[in-house]
Image 1 (cartoon, rainbow, N blue to C red):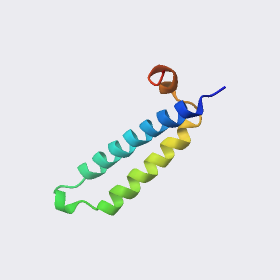
Image 2 (cartoon, helix red, strand yellow):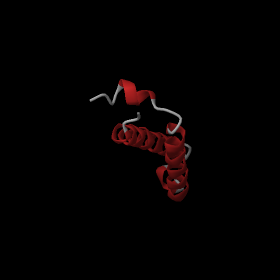
Image 3 (spheres, rainbow, N blue to C red):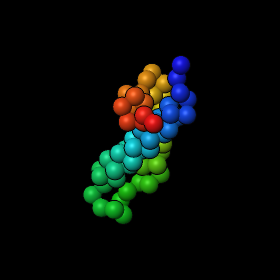
Image 4 (cartoon, rainbow, N blue to C red):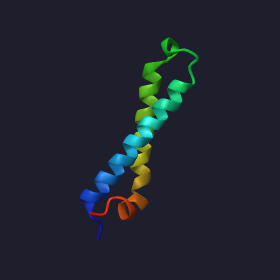
Length: 69
């Protein structure tokens, strides 16, 4: 039986990390900070976070390794 509180916490951590990684990668594609398309960064990062949650449905290794309490 899956511990849903643990799963939600682990999936959220993974999703937040994915959001941040995507934002950093998207910002890094601009030559200057003023050239950053912030709407595109937010959109791509949000989509990546949603996909991370959906991927986590298949299983999270962190649920057993990191989030044991």
